[in-house]
Amino acid sequence: MQHAPLDEWDHVQAMQERKALHTLLAKRQEDLPPRRMKDSYLEVILPLGSQPEIREKYLNVHNSVRFGRILEDLDSLGVLICYTHTKQEAQPRSPLSIVTALVDKINLCKKIIYPDCDIKFTGNVSWVGKTSMEVKMHMLQLHDGDYSPVLDATFVMVARDPENKRPAFVNPLIPESPEEEEIFKQGEFNKTKRIDFSTASLLKMAPTAEERNIVHDIFLNTLDTRTVSFRSRVLPPNSVWMEDAKLKSLQICHPQERNIFNRIFGGFLMRKAFELGWATACSCGGSRPFIVSVDDIMFQRPVEVGSLLLLSAQVCYTEKNYIQVRVHSEVYDADTREHQTTNIFHFTFISEKEVPRVVPKTYGESMLYLDGKRHFTATVKEI
Ligand SMILES: CCCCCC(=O)SCCNC(=O)CCNC(=O)[C@H](O)C(C)(C)COP(=O)(O)OP(=O)(O)OC[C@H]1O[C@@H](n2cnc3c(N)ncnc32)[C@H](O)[C@@H]1OP(=O)(O)O
Image (cartoon, rainbow, N blue to C red; front, side, top):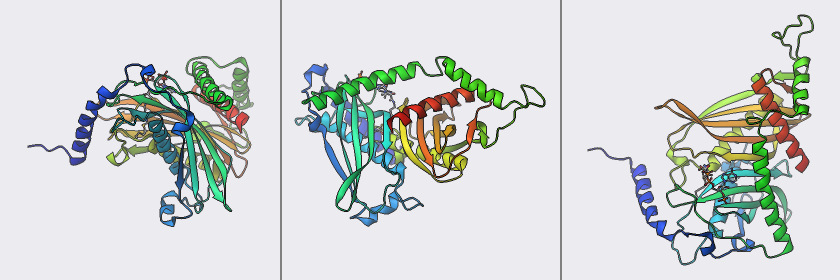
């Protein structure tokens, strides 16, 4: 007789139980009671100052807080806020499976997060579509009796049915004041902006005339004036070829990292991608990089337990002390030998020292360079 491993059996059983929750789903969004922004507002304290025993998990070797751990906490809080928004008092359990679809933006206004001061997270649902919810979160840290801001984050979560197969409706959101109307409108605007940005993607459209000139100038700058051959390329001073500014890693996705739907946690994926991105920025820049901004992390596909997760980090663009890193993650199915992209991450770092310029050699690298430049320019406008 064959036995299913105990943990797997637990999840099979849990999924069977979740199937029964289908009857609790709303048929139309209008059947769900509207919510206010304050209905989903949550405040959570991470007591790093008052409970030293939890510090170890958060500590990095520079005696500050590991940003990857903060990404995990933001992901969990975002999901909790969405469950609060969609909570029905009469239902003992929520029929919804809420998943992270996108990290729109995380902007940091502090370079260092201290490992021995309490942290406060706050957040609420700021915009709602039919099945998606935008969540705005803030993180503050306690110094001399006052909480001061560290970062602002915007995530998009999507509600799915109990088996995580189809989208499910969420409660409408009603803004209550002119300020809330403004926040709601911003959510609407963010949605359009995301569509525009992805339509103009360099994977779908040719670069603009200005961008083409940039690429051509870089190309001319790398030609060997002695041979005047397209084939021999020379690296300009204070520069590094893009092909030498990348790192790869492999993760085996163990059951320990799964969420209640038996898929890998978005927060875990973000932490792993961030840490590889940081290491790449560190080895390219030659000094300690600090995270400034995270943007446009799309969770295109869930990552199954047991997957082989391949992460590739590439420095795409540098300017003065800034380093723009793109991390591509894909799962490899050893049985079918197929690769599938699951996420693309964009991180902006600032280094202690000025960093070398990265130089693309191929057309594909040039497109990554321009994409990195676009992300960097959008980030710098906001910070
Ligand atoms: C408690 C445990 C959970 C913890 C959280 C996690 O760790 S979750 C684990 C990490 N995340 C994941 O594994 C998710 C992987 N991705 C997916 O499964 C899928 O890509 C997805 C469910 C997010 C979206 O799938 P589809 O694009 O097929 O969905 P569909 O077209 O029906 O759209 C559903 C709603 O999502 C919105 N939507 C979809 N992709 C979006 C994106 N990138 N940015 C913004 N919004 C998006 C749509 O506008 C729509 O909203 P409207 O209907 O409002 O117009």
